[in-house]
Image 1 (cartoon, rainbow, N blue to C red):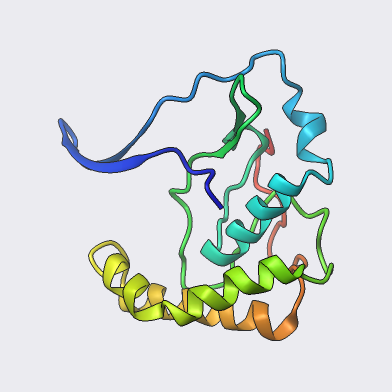
Image 2 (cartoon, rainbow, N blue to C red):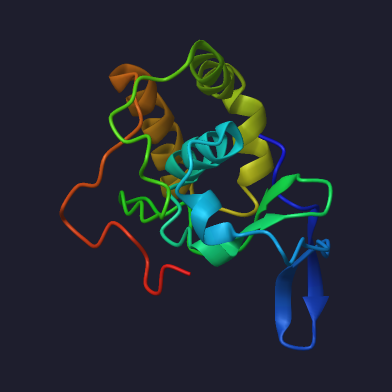
Length: 159
């Protein structure tokens, strides 16, 4: 899951904020068609979004650079303690996880103490607990989540 551009916290004229490395995108690439494909990198992105509880995965938050590498940006509405997953990447809903996906999720739980220590300056204890609760639930269910029906499943606008 190496698709988040290098990101660092910086103090700016309006306070603390995140700065990400600029990605030179392939402007000829059809993101709309790609976002609905079964591409394995998108599948990993969908799993990442389920883990972080991303409520704003839009097509325009997917970038492909000129070498074909996929990036995901704009994760500012993530890690909420309530389940609020909203994404354009629902094509794997209810599909069983691959062994490699189960391994990654299991490793997150195995490394919980290290991950918690890195997240504590950034997230509340409730948000961190919810993160590991989501990971445990994903492993227990063994499959990608499906829309709950309690809120819109796709962010607006979707692009």
